Image (cartoon, rainbow, N blue to C red; front, side):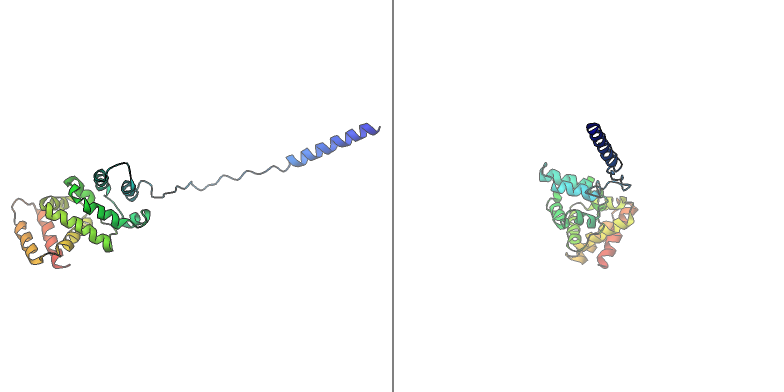
Length: 203
């Protein structure tokens, strides 16, 4: 009788352990209802696209600048400064250094990129726009006249006027007034010149 009783007790002990373990399963973590986050919240924004081009090492400088110029429309420079860890001025200096690459097809993109410019970055942008105006006055005036965003247009005009303010303002104003009488200019273009003269007189 001894051996069967021991076998019975052993069997009962094993069954008890199995039952105890199975009654307390390890709970899997509940699925999170929060959407997954990405490392860069502003993915595919204008600022991120331009910065990726600025940092890119798979193209030469000329191609890099040309591609950046085509992507500037809608730029928020505060966002760009955050994403680039403060490289706004360096980026604008690169564009200024290679301003000869700025073609008429880039004007709209460049002129729609004045949001949150300040300090040295605003002055650098003004230098780009001012030099462009001096080089291609007719093309710049036409591009500004075609802008549907009046605030952006006035912002660019103010930047150009700021840059022209370093020259002989009286002479510049006389040249603009003469040019304004050009019969080939349409009314929107004449309005751009008038706004520029007004900005020169109210820096």
